[in-house]
Image 1 (cartoon, rainbow, N blue to C red):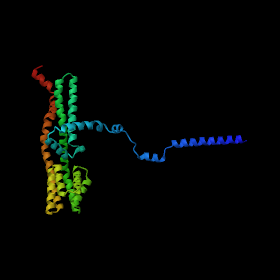
Image 2: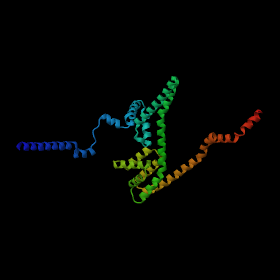
Image 3: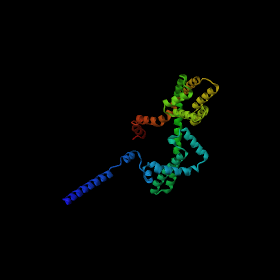
Image 4: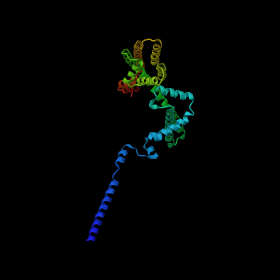
Amino acid sequence: MMETLATLILSVLAMLSIGLLFVGLTRLQEADPVQSRLSKYAVPARSLEELELRQPFSERIVKPIVGRISSFLIRRTPPKTVESIKRNLVLAGNPYNMDVRDLLGIKGLLALLLGGMVLLVFVRGGNLLMGMLFSLVLGALGYYVPNIWLSSRVSARKSELVKTLPDALDLLTVCVEAGLGFDSAMFKVSQKWDNALSLEFSRVLSEIRMGKTRREALRALVARTDVQDIATFVGAIIQADQLGVSIAKVLQIQSEQMRTRRRQRAEELAHQAPIKMIFPMVFLIFPSIYVIVLGPALPTLVKGITGK
């Protein structure tokens, strides 16, 4: 009887042990709730190679190549040329947050790509001398294409500033006559539009908040834009501020003058249109008309002249 009872107790203990072992293993397989919550917010550590591979192709390959080319070119570029490029970048509004090194790197990369591709084509054709000549020509072209692009950006930005200035002056006049200060009126203009002039007004206000006087910030605006209308407007505002003249009256006069100048520019362009149309008419339209009108009669004329 005792042996049977002992066997039964041992069986029960063994079953309990197996059950507890199973429960423990199940608990170990379950995720810790604290760790599971933290894993939703914590970023797992990655290796340096994985971080590099996650970057786009332009950051991994193109940008280092451009940086090395720009470092090589900037040491061999005259300081006056560097200052001219920097000035044009400022006038263009710093497109794509580009600096002088970036532009020089792009110029060198384009020159190498165009020159190398042409040289490779001619070398495979067995004409090394012509390949070197054309590669130099296209390499020089690729080197100066970014300058043409930058000049076009400068011209487009200046044109945009000239076109939007009269409307901005109207809004400035309305805001000042409604009781706002000049700085608050500029803030309203920067909030209403999203163009080059509103961005420049925002920069002027930022410089004033950083400690510059209004006169210094406005003169910096003239230096960044290089537009005669803006220089005239800024000069009038500075003079009115110094003499204590009503800014609202100055703004009203400046707005009328800017609109008159814009109308005069439109009339000037309209007068230039007939002269500009001469070349496409002579070289493109008139030949087509001659072909259509005289084409059917040409065989008869040739037959009459030759007698055949």
